[in-house]
Amino acid sequence: MSNAGAKQWAESRGVSRRAFLRQSVGFSTGAAAVAATSGLSGGGAVAATGGRIDPGYFASQFYDEAENTGVREVVETGSPFRFWGPRTPQKVKAFEDEFAKYMGTTYALGVTSGTAALDCAVAGLGIGPGDEVIVPAYTWWSDYTCVVHAGALPVFADIDRSLCLDPADFERRITPRTRAVIAVHLLGGPCDMDEILRIARARKIAVIEDAAQAVGATYRGKKLGSLGDVGIYSFQLNKMISSGEGGALVTRDPVIYERAVRFHDMGVFRGLFSDRTGQSRVPMFAGENFRMSEFTGAVLLAQLAKLDRMKAELKRAFLAVLDGVKDLPNIRFRRQPDPEGDLGYALYMEMNDRAGRDRCIAGLRERGVPAGTLSGSVLLPTEPSVVNKQTRHPDWPSFTSPEGRAIRYGRETCRQTLDIFDRFVQVRMGPKYSDADVARIIKAIREVFPQAYKA
Image (cartoon, rainbow, N blue to C red; front, side, top):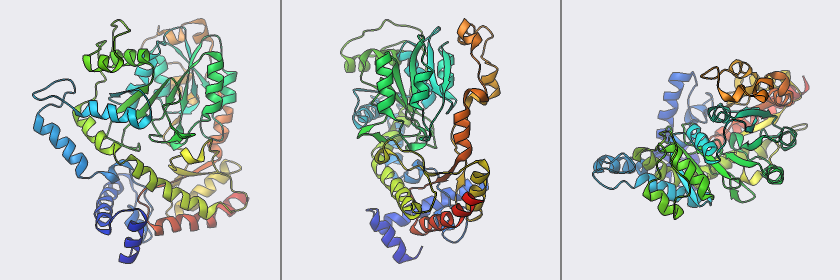
């Protein structure tokens, strides 16, 4: 990018040219490291000269002195454990307080991963053997394993063109044993929460929102994770804010919160948590150890302060690409229950069939565009370990009940999901895309899509 172009790009994003240059140098270095291990040809600066456009890892492109300062303060206090040390630890508690405020909920709990947050959410709801939980057929492993680990039975429902849970199929899968549904806000976009909540409330089914891939996204002006009974988030490297690993749970219900807190800390309910709820309402029970460290809390506290800026930069790239291709004949995009709330993680184009999808992906990749099939999740009902109901013990209660023995998984249980997966092309967005990157993506789609669609 020229000096004039760099100045224009930076000013459009509300940062100084000097800050832009610092960020772009850091991004190029990070992209080179990615290229060395993944075969990519580099980041935005390289892409502008004709290499592959690399969206990079979102969160780490925004690391700066704020994260360094937070970690340094933990080192200097010698107190990395969140509950005590030579000095009073503050980072995780402060992150929880700020995260609850940001998400518009009463309580937040920091844990070691999004997976741990799901386990805590299930424990918070008291789900166990004999219960059924409805899970999208296309999502990450953790939405399935949290149900199995509780001894409950996972029941898969299809996704729809939103790439999230199909409310109609969710409703079809309900039985008298259904205790909860996991509404997964996949790939930066919200579920159709109006319908999901309507169905769930009418049937007295708890709603767990999995916003691991949509941290900071909204639905009708409310943050994802705050609409259901309990919400969870992930801060792994691929997520909007990241500490490498980490997770959080939010809720307004003091009983769900206390049960989740006890489960994450060996059954204990320490004073700082009872200070938040006003009193204990749940007796002690056996828990796990999913406690967040002060190092993690320090990084997340710094990242959370930047989240709105990160979202804005990512969405700006998405909207520019969308505006540049939306007039193409026959082009169809992912259905967005709330376009304003979607993070703009990627542009999703729907083809007529798998062959057209593959032609489109191949043509875009030839032009250096980061295109592929849907990513970041698994077609769970088709996985051998799921089909065979493999657990860590042969007598695990999930599959020893009459319902557990009778249930069948496999391709025939998620035909709609498989059809949708086979038709969508994903074009990744990056918060640091230059004007040249955006222009290249638009040009490539306009060249490739019409031919791939017709062939």
